Length: 254
Ligand SMILES: Nc1ncnc2c1ncn2[C@@H]1O[C@H](COP(=O)(O)OP(=O)(O)OP(=O)(O)O)[C@@H](O)[C@H]1O
Ligand SMILES: [Mg+2]
Image 1 (spheres, helix red, strand yellow):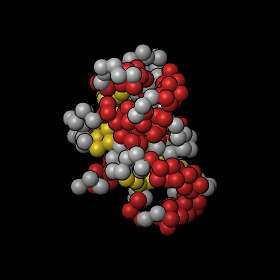
Image 2 (cartoon, rainbow, N blue to C red):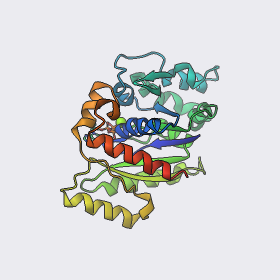
Image 3 (cartoon, protein in one colour):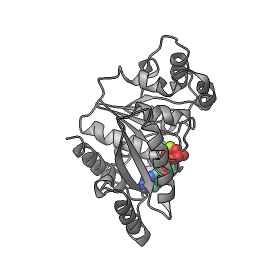
């Protein structure tokens, strides 16, 4: 089992879209994948068609674990649009404060994920900020994957993220940067290519995924319909790009 946090402090860069469609792409390749939504916005949960507020969410399990009650993640596991999901709910926002005073607060999620050995990959969709929930995600993870919109000045946000990432490494020595995925990519824009080159220069070439995710309205429409891109429109550019990303992703684990 490999646990991967999908994170970036910048909002709207395609974290949730990547979590869903990379997971769906890997599932098509026969991998067993679990999605965990630790964002109180619950976009991942909603994008898989769960729109009503649910009581049995990750919030319930995190609280129980934090306060020493008997619990496990699979208590709230659901299958949504064919994908295994630990859903989020709006009340998860309260966890940031509630967990702040708990002993071992950074390790709560990590303890809960450990028994889930039957999965090949566990993806954690993080909120766009560094709080107790993101720290818990990163402490649980073997890798972090950073989606990045190929737009003006994204490197500033990345540098800030990596500064925090160094601090998290003190709590989780095994975590590694899996790489950057450029999203909402527009091949016609010179800026997009420039940003790719800047990233490769600042980090190393093998940390920037060769596959980039083009801007494709089908990805947004699929999310609105509560489906992954392969079920929504398997011939779209979004489906092609996420299929290719799944292939490249797997090649890193050979
Ligand atoms: N490649 C793409 N082409 C077109 N639209 C996209 C693409 N990727 C994501 N989107 C759309 O952009 C919006 C933001 O994407 P998403 O929710 O994945 O970002 P996020 O990083 O998870 O945001 P947040 O930080 O708020 O959690 C969504 O409406 C999504 O459907
Ligand atoms: Mg999101």
